Length: 117
Image 1 (cartoon, rainbow, N blue to C red):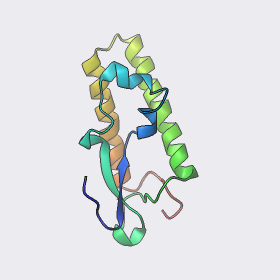
Image 2 (image 1 turned 90 degrees about the vertical axis):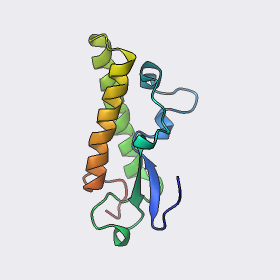
Image 3 (image 1 turned 90 degrees about the horizontal axis):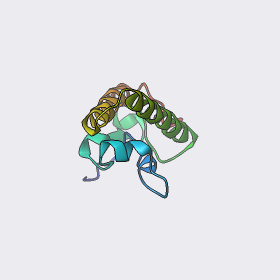
Image 4 (image 1 turned 30 degrees about the vertical axis):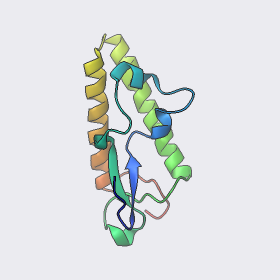
């Protein structure tokens, strides 16, 4: 993705949950690609670049909490999916729904990723 001055590319479902020694189970169950364009959004690094969207300016304790909260939501999807014998497609669709809902909250500035706003 191209760089945009004043903005950072944010993975809605964090890369850290899909990569590394122990990726979250939902990626195996869903076949979801963490780098899917639908899982990204440009967020401003400061309020001057966008009046509403959530601010993203590097990794910090608020971003760490966002990642932890996202892990819990993925855990919940896995549990619910297993209880209901979901197919790979159902896991994939549930992840996309989570991404879509979270994207809207990021666009509206409802999720705090940085102390700037």
